[in-house]
Length: 480
Length: 104
Image (tube, rainbow over all chains, first blue to last red; front, side, top):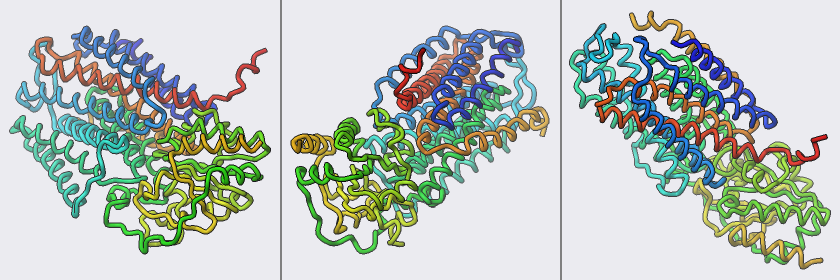
């Protein structure tokens, strides 16, 4: 191996690790991302021009490789520019699926090569280049691992993408966990059998493993519903890291190994952090009990819903001392973050103190809401986290809930039968007045009723978030 | 067993990096969870190097393998470029607003 290539690889690994490290703090995160990106591009270019195999040959098919790199760069930049901030979670999922596809395809191409040479165990000379290739159970295990992990990542991420963008709805059936488990066992069993019986491998067996892995990915993601989606994406993200790492083992390439395992481990930690934020166990999430028909929210919330006119709401907001806005996914869907910021500025000009209470899983992913509000120029200092917010509500005159539902549902505290029981919530009921903006009385993403809407302090303002805020702004202006 | 012995150093690296990965992002404010996931996703695109190497060893007249390799490199590159660019766009929004005053 070329020594310049080695140096570039080592620097790339350093950039990945420091990049991840710097990502842990808002102030250094952007530089960290750029570092790692630069390291990655350097490693790709160095591989293209400097890589030599054991027989000292450079990469062949350079035109094809350069073509794929150029096309990929173009598509990557285009989608990164075009995607809306609200669609960010599904975009991450889609990109993740592509990474899985890449890893699975590597295994497929390598398995095809081995299949052409008849899976001869031991040292064999490659007919064309004369490179010794070594087919062993170890290598076969790695190839199958790459195929299975990559396949699950690909189909699972595609389903997650489809669900988050509303193209696919949840589906699950009774006993699906058992079918899932059986699918996984058959897949792994088939792989183990083929590894043991290495002399008699049939190509259709390999195809079967690939297809089973894809099916498992679908089954694995499909029943997971509601607020749990980010956890699954994070888990699939760490799977794609492991899939990548198998290529590193296969090619004896340490950048790929380190990059892949780093993501695998960091992704696992991130998954656990997200589960903790929702006070749910990973097993529970994967079983898909959230919003999956079986869960009944006990006695449905009853009572009368109070509605308030926009002009009355404007008066109450204008004369309040302290207002806390609780943004949810509804705000994101309505693209109302800019209008929301406008209302905030208007109220602040009247001497009202306005802050935003951010639940850890508000939106569709942890941190999603912060990104959206940052896009609308909302100051970072005005965003308060859950623990602080729960203290602040007591001294708050008005809480304005914008399209949030499950994260403020008191059933999480009071009703052990509720599927979200135990999830920490924003306990808005200690505030003096609560305004809730929703499009209709439809339950939230987790599919359960919210008794907060029937609370005596609560008044509903129905309508599309953006339109409602615009009208509210006009009403506040008219007060002058 | 042969394979295990031949790859001993890779296995050591693997174990050490697992622990490194666990500790490197231990305390992250939830604000950064989405960008961090996106960033980690972009790094997992490192698999593209493997795709390039594999494709570079395919015989030039094996069109099936070439097309699959092409797809692997393409998918990997979209993952890398899209991932880092999307993360950068998200983080761009956290930038402090009073930047122009800082000069001079």
